[in-house]
Structure formats: structure tokens, C-alpha cells
Length: 102
Image 1 (cartoon, rainbow, N blue to C red):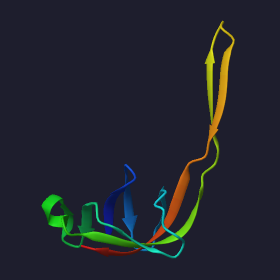
Image 2 (image 1 turned 90 degrees about the vertical axis):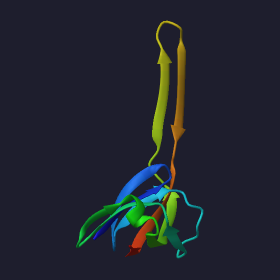
Image 3 (image 1 turned 180 degrees about the vertical axis):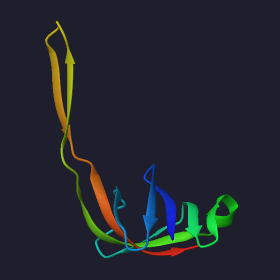
């Protein structure tokens, strides 16, 4: 059984017991999180989507908060002497999927 959830502008395919990294949620470690934006759920009967999963939720717990590896952004324009270097570390929340309520 798996579900497709949307959070942080992205979609994730999750199953019970999975650990995924999502955009920062602002929850402390050990806190419970409920994802209510469920797009589809796969069950023994088949794939359900749309109005069939309007009340479906996914329960998860926060494992850790952190920052991803640094990404270097380098801008350059030839013949003008223009160089600009910038770095970025995206913050994330790692969650463990506990239960899919379909």
C-alpha cells in the first residue's frame, strides 16, 4: 500500500515505514505531522484518486531537521569581467511515515 502526497510544492510516493526528506516544516524532532493533501492511494482494490481520497491522511513523525549539501551558484558574463559566486544550503525535515489512513 502506498500513497502520493503533496507538500512543499513537490509530490512524494510514500509507503508505511519510509523515511523521506521534505521542505522544512517547522516542527521539532519527535513531533507528529499529518499530511492531509493526499493525491492518490493504492490499496488492494486498486488505485483511488480524486474524490475517493478527499478524506485520506498520512501520519508521520519528524526524525530530524537539517541542511542539505551546499549548492554553488556561479554567474559569469564573458568579456565584461562580471563574476558572481553564491552558495545555498536548503533546509529540510526528515520524516518517517507511520500510517496511511485511506
